[in-house]
Length: 531
Image 1 (cartoon, rainbow, N blue to C red):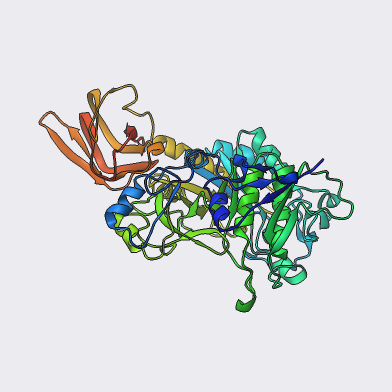
Image 2: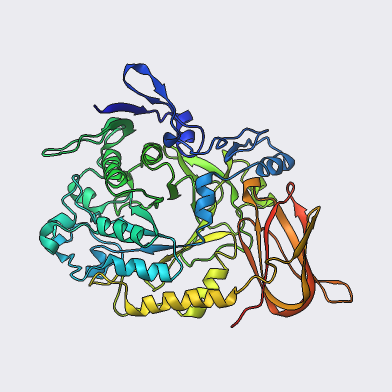
């Protein structure tokens, strides 16, 4: 017997769906349940002005000292820590654009153009695994609205193509292959939908009302164990039904990736997305999944070059907009997103300070979809991107687009392997591993036992205690005393410094010179590159 659940997405519950305390689920008979699946999986997700949490409310009346104190109390959720530990993730842009040569499709493509006759998702998985990736995100639906699995709610899908006699399912093949090779599964489902604008319900002006998910259709053989009632427009309900399909029929999903794109429609027909309901359903069906980048768990870094800011903060001011969407209080491309000055600048418009770490997306080629006349970036380019993303407290999301056969191009597969090998040479054995280490107040000292050359330094805070370091210096002892060899600002989960020349020293130390609260250093790695 199906259980009917009402996901409350009032203003209070919207905050819960985006990461705070779990919203109530009402079962028949009025029994109220509060499973973690509906909200944050972590008990301390929501904080107050005096207690730690994933997000803490702020006020225009807060002083700079108030804001810094609150920022020091922000803590990531368990799912955010797991996501950050991935380091680098993969994007796979694949769909009708692969065959039409477009980057943004029209929505009126003939589905029969989709003919990946050599599709081999195991080849994708092997290449990604060998390239060092542990999570991959597939464009299950891009802006054109073409769906890579046989959805019950659209005719613009693989089922309308003659490929595999209409029995093809790219999402199924992708998910199975990734898991077989130890790679986590992510899905990108575009909020914009050109096909639904032309032939469906996108931007039709409908009002929000209660919708039951899943909505069973003619010939539907499903017997849902639970149904959910959420507020949505006609198109919002369409998205909810597709989210339900993806999150209940294809195994565990570890990242759900939304962008904020609108369809190519007149300004007076803009679809106001039902973010609160979408977030709540994802939390209910995939409680361990990070919701990015128009989502509460992960933010877009602000460019498509894969480059983080010199000092990238995971604790940033946010505003809630458009039915609970987690949004930037400052501009998405602001040069400074989280320093003391940024916290003060955002004060008039910010609703919260929040743990909202950056994801740096970039394509290995010039385009996001495959184009035969393009070639992959060089190893030097990819290495530079790595150090300016993963090395700056961010996760790298690298797009590798499959070609018209349904394969990752040979040149790209080769480049991924070369890229991993290069990073392994840039950061070989950690010389500090097993060395004698002493800690003091804001200082960690490592004795290597003898003088060693170092030209790469990696730091990490234990982010379970937040992101606290604002400035630090690295010093080496060369026999005549301590001398400074590097200095920088924010650290977070990962900060990598490249010294311009190798420095010799037996004893090395990091000294925190400015911090919001007690800094907890989890890693102080010393390396001599082999490049």
